[in-house]
Image 1: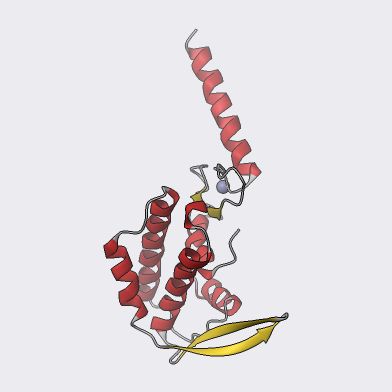
Image 2: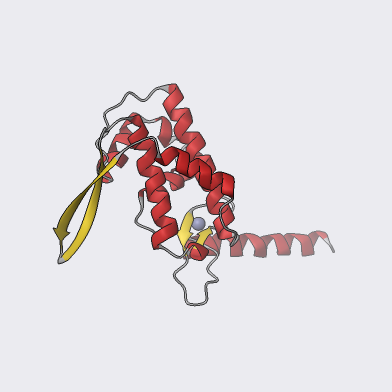
Length: 184
Ligand SMILES: [Zn+2]
């Protein structure tokens, strides 16, 4: 899996179809845990409008992942939308040193709601810049749909995990069996 806030955020859609149809983007505790994990100091009230904004953002980013996994580049209007978002909060940088490496830590000039949205979008841009976008996939198990990164040499990975591959294999086998039985 990719260690990126954007991927965790996009993959939160998985809970919608599992775990008793739980929508994490309407759950203050789930979001607080997520933002703590990703060092986003954001104090805010989770209103209905904000939840809807997050859900819309996730749907849009998921559709962009769909484009990337089909090996097409982002549309100009999506690039413009990303850039419009990025103008909404100012970022400051801090040179740090950790584990023998220097890096630039970024934080918001103002930790407001825009920063929450922009942290996710910034993380998505990192996915495009620092990783090979042509290796981004959506799991082929229709009941899964998890976004993952294909690190295989052959670049032909279709499932996020072998368990998803097995589920689909068994299902196809049974469907074939059933159709051959009913065909008799
Ligand atoms: Zn899967």
